[in-house]
Image (tube, rainbow, N blue to C red):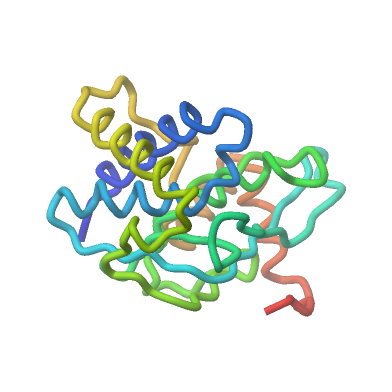
Length: 206
């Protein structure tokens, strides 16, 4: 299985390239993010898949007074969210970006490298609709293709350079124990997710 350090470096490269090419709305570009992660991992000899579907995560305000399940609505693809799966793990920048577009000032969240061998907490929900083992840029909308080609070229160019401190966020969400460890250290989102686990289930849109 691919190591966390490799995934973190890939996510860091993709994040920097998203911010460079789409400074105003990089956090909404999950289709580009998933293609970038897929392309870089594939170039290393791995066999990832881009997954399209629905996604929700528990978002909590900085003052801890507001909390809701929030997700994305994609402008550029047929699914509301896109992420990558590899060797039974979900790899996604979506959680990391979710607080930026939140309807209230939200506590920071971290990127996903979740081992699907573990049950996901109630505060995280991924519902895949379609798997693309070899997603083709040529199959995208014509207005996206050119931007995607530029983006993927930038990802490969940056990946080839030495990265100074290739960190994305403060920790990776990998398992229930990673959330518990962060909660013990005082992470507001991790604490909220653990509290939400014991609350009565609310109806979700999917």
